[in-house]
Amino acid sequence: MQFSRPATIALVCSALAMGGCASGIVNASPIETFRIGPPPAPGKPLTLCQRLAADKFESTFQLHKGFSSDAWAKNQARVSAETFYARCLGGRIN
Image (cartoon, rainbow, N blue to C red; front, side):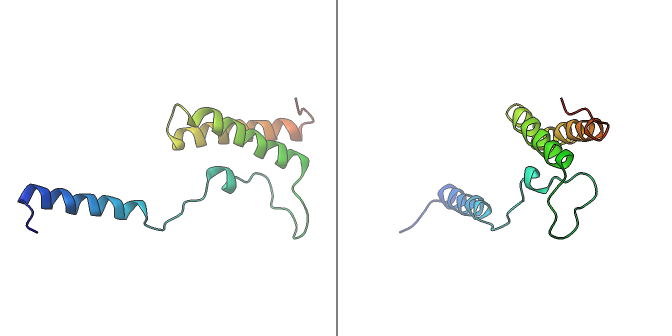
């Protein structure tokens, strides 16, 4: 079977594009990699403020990623979680 030059180029480009879809590189979710405060001792759970700040990060990230880039949403979520963490350490968790 003989393909025309444009069809061959289209076929090669399609194959290259599909190869990128299955590259095997898995980026961790920003939600899974977010940590704040000192790391807990081995075997110890996160503190209340750390857990609540992580929840704040996740909810803010999910809210913003629908209408902006992941990088911008991650930055907004990080700022929101850091602010919340500082307030929590001061005794204000509302």
